[in-house]
Image 1 (cartoon, rainbow, N blue to C red):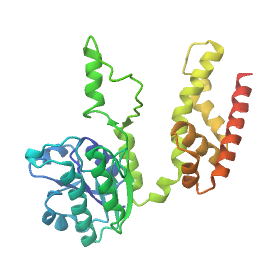
Image 2 (image 1 turned 90 degrees about the vertical axis):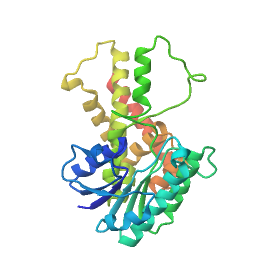
Image 3 (image 1 turned 180 degrees about the vertical axis):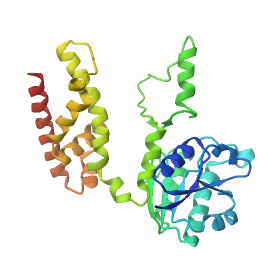
Image 4 (image 1 turned 135 degrees about the vertical axis):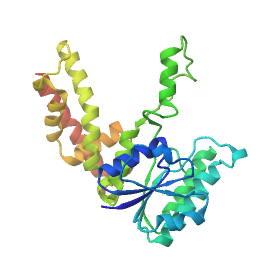
Length: 306
């Protein structure tokens, strides 16, 4: 069990993360700014401490005694007149948290970044997210950095409002060609990932564990669609024909590394070299896993259709 110091816990993602971390029986201490305490109403058995990530003098005393920090503070738009900028909330705030963590004996930080954060990014948002990451990597602490895509769920500021517009408006404009790729992620999945990362970074990075869940959900839909197209029968939900049961049998026939390589490559879109780095093997070995896994899956699916 860990005593976890959470910044940004009153936000949309933060509340979900606090819930997930509490569900894993960790002790949670949330940093709150004066006036935001009510945003955590309904959460029992958590500690609330007053402070501000932009006021470093407030952090050390309230962080004392914690062994892990989950740093979630971030913004998606700036309000310079109010001092709300990417530079201050992403870079300065992260440095303040890291300095307080180092002084209070915190061993690990789990940091929220964003998909697209990289060196040479075009937007200030991604530039400052990258610089915050660099500070985390240079901190000397054990660390895990998450780069989720657009996060959706009750209370989000993008997908839910967009869904309301689509439902109510008689005409909805399509930006550009409409072919821009977008892969939102449920807030519950992000929260669960943060909870799993506490003290278990090596286990979290092991694709042979998390790829199974991804493969199960994705392939279940694909196999169900394949069966309907092949038989022309209506979909039904008896246990014998449950696509999840069918899929479980299919995936068990693949080796763990074949399964991981196939899902990382065809679902997550990782190139061979990155899969090799994740699996701790060579690119040539990954290509063998992909080839063998494809052949094995093809034979299994063909046998099921006969």
